[in-house]
Amino acid sequence: MSDGRAPVDEEVPQLYLFPASRAQYQLYFVQHLLGDAPTYHISLRCELHGRIDEQAMRCALTLIVRRHEALRTHFVLSEGESLQAVDPDGTLEYLARDDSEAAWLDEEARKPFDLETGPLFGSDWQRHEPGRATQAMSP
Image (cartoon, rainbow, N blue to C red; front, side, top):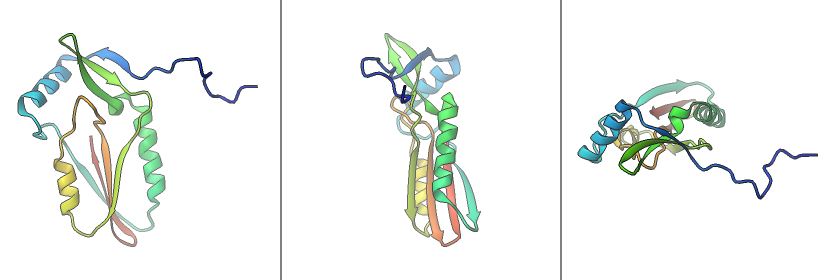
């Protein structure tokens, strides 16, 4: 009877590598040219009111990241060629904080992604008061 785990001697792949598209290569090039400028960084915020289950939100976002390879992809340079590296695990970078000031979310939204290490998707959760929070996502 199997418990669903891979045998110890079986190697689990660390990354799936694919050639980067021309648009992805251009994105990679622009980041190296401009450095830490958040050129392609878009932040989406949702004000949430009422009874909010933060753990359920975190679980839902984690499932979305695991389902969509684009949210688990970063880029590596190998022999002068830009490659997509898809992480098989799909961990979600999720920060939560109790704070009524929007400055923290503004700072997080301006932080550029590192295309070489990833993740290229993150979510921040700011609790303002009971029954009111802001969910920020940066794809």
